[in-house]
Image (cartoon, rainbow, N blue to C red; front, side, top):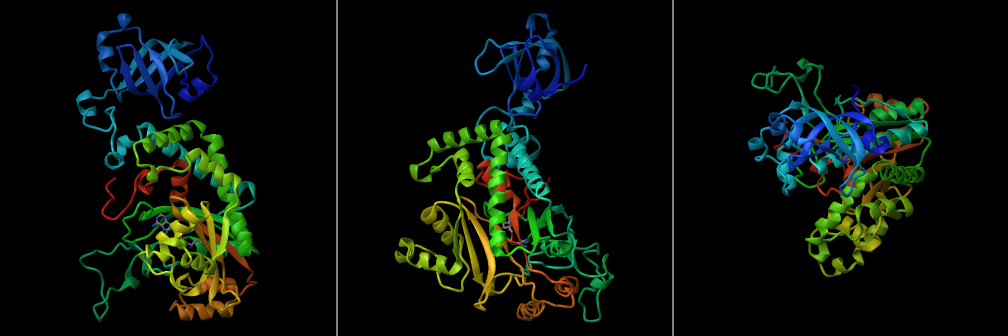
Length: 479
Ligand code: 4AD
Ligand code: MG
């Protein structure tokens, strides 16, 4: 007999159907009712065991977490909250789970902290919470590919190992196969990287943008979607050392086209998740409402997950320049009451306390800030006519902060060369990038969406470590 997934049974089964299902036991009550889940949906199927006619040894092995295979007939459920009962005709135990062992893990039915769940990476997937999170993560990723594919973009695989530091922040992880204790050295004692595997120093990429620009100058509209790595020692709820980034790059787009694209793209993802993950989103929404009840009023969510997703779909983002942001901040109550820790001055970068004020207190909606001072933005951003700001844009989301960073690119060869000089970047090493400005250079723009920050938004999870299966953070890379 062919197996049917539980999602399909629940969605399309009819009374009287005989089905074979396989899954893991979530709960077993009164030696009779099995709650079975196979991961296809957050919903369990309730199976009813005829314990009088079932071998006692088999009944004993139906324990929380055990893997079982059941054949039975669908009947109208006598219980509340479900349509079907699966009246079991035969049971096969596929894999046992020792109740003693289970009682020491997060599978034991009581409330566990998210930190504790993170330590049990293998069992974390089995919880309702993380089942929902990772199904939504998948849908979020799929929505991204679908959005670009439907609009005629081409997906480009940009390298994970690279010789360039695209962002120039120097926060890279080295890639080498030298013997750490005994690398070849030059006469002056420094390491001789020319003898390394690639014949040069290499690192894990911080962004696929520069390579994507090369492709955009031929294919027109492209995007990369891959893992990126940053060795910044930020132990915050929104930083990972290994995260995924989505980077579209579009020939002939300017900064306004870039903002329009980003806004449309973000709404589309929210819409897709609402439409395709209704059960999981409803579960997370309800969880949030319950959690809020035990929090002081000031810490509760002003809007719940479903409302927040709808809000992004139905409302335009606020758009301001960096200069306007500084003015707004300097006129704000927290600034006047000296509540900000960091200075607010034209020419200094905005800190998260400033961003939070703008997004969560002032505008109460997503905000796009553009035209930042050239001094603290990357070398490739296009210089504005004022000669001191660049056509950069950051998109800030409530509860998350910066979700997108992007810009129009400096397509003018001379200006770019000047920028390289000012930023101490070697034009010779970047010859392959500089070349795009010599053979039919064209205006173009793009941005990078932090994928996990987006999944924080589509799931409502407040720590970035809880939206990636195996978080890499300072001191943590066990699994
Ligand atoms: O603003 P960033 O550094 O921009 C770039 O890397 C550009 N090359 C993108 C482009 O224009 N193609 O990073 C883009 C986004 C941020 O807005 C943030 O959402 C996310 O990547 N991000 C991180 N996410 C998790 N952990 C980290 N350590 C992150 N650093 C950046
Ligand atoms: Mg940024």
